Amino acid sequence: MFLNKYGFTTLIFTLIISSTFAQGFKFAALSDSRGDFNGVNDPVVTALITHMMVTNPDIKFLVVTGDLVNGHDDDPARTKRELLHWKEVMAPLYNNPNMVWPKIWPVIGNHEVRNPKDIDNFKEVFPDVFMNGPAGQKGVSYSFDFENSHFCMINSDHWYYGDPNDSTDDRRDWHYIKDLDWVEEDFKAARGRGVEHIFTFSHEMPFPIGGHLRDGLPNLGKNLTLPMDSTRLWYLEQRNKYWALMKKYNADAHICGHEHTYGREEVEGVYQVLTGSSGAPLYNFNPTPETDADTTIRFELPYEKATTYYKVLDYNYGPGKNSQRSENFVGYKAFNYTVFDVRKDSVIVKMYGSFPKEGSRSEMGTKIKLLDEFVMKKK
Ligand SMILES: [Fe+2]
Image (cartoon, rainbow, N blue to C red):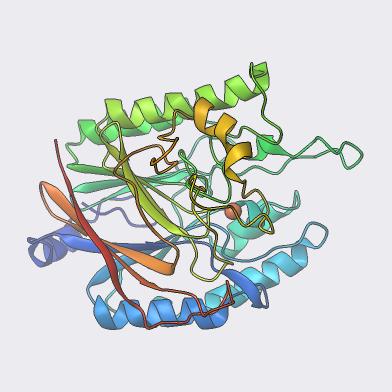
């Protein structure tokens, strides 16, 4: 089943596409395309979507998990101009007749909520979404079914009046899922309709993999010490409650960005696929004992400073460990997009990427090619 923009089930359309999708369907995801060309890294994201259309011409839609543009704290009109420019850059997809309405599903990132007016501007630039989200989040959190799958887009980034005179205020209440009740009702209703797959999307990641160890959905903030204060405990608990819902309703994967690299891992039976950077400066992974963090990158921590975070997050850290949540973590420091080939009992996931030019974090240095492939099987 597919819902049109007015929320009606379109039977005829469904009958037509059902035969087309008898073997399944494909969607793609990418994230963090911001850069220096009117707020967008035009060359990198253009190369990725061009490759996508040639290599995977049967993709039905793309999900973009935030930080489309740089944005600006004091100039929401500039942020809006950048978003409009982003849509121009993505015109080849919007004009692609093989894709279905609205062709690109947007999710907000922290760079799209740098000013209180940004949310309204985002809704104006991207009006073609479902308005079935929770109160206060309509137009930025929403969900829909496509064929045998449910898609739940969750806004994880909220504008906040940080105190400019307080150097310890790192605005860490930007990042969390406000509406867990809505998420649970949404999952429950989807399972009631008999969907075979549930995919969720937000900008922030439940399990940081590098560069943003201190924020994301755990939202642990700067200078973490033990025992944790009540605020940090609350944020971590929100993340835990969210992941418990993913497990309870047997969701397939949470797809996200925010960290500018690619990494996938299975956490307690549910996948996190972080498909960060389609243009934003590339980050390192969480440092291991053998490597040092690039401390020129904001939030990237050397191993000694990261260990308290690893401990609280229950990461696989220590000599010979990968400093990630799961031992099965696979990551590539590359510009990338990811394709999900959805079948009845499994999803074949392929990541296509390009490694950076030597000495650069914002330019491609190698041809885009298949870098990672794995299968998510339904349990
Ligand atoms: Fe971000």
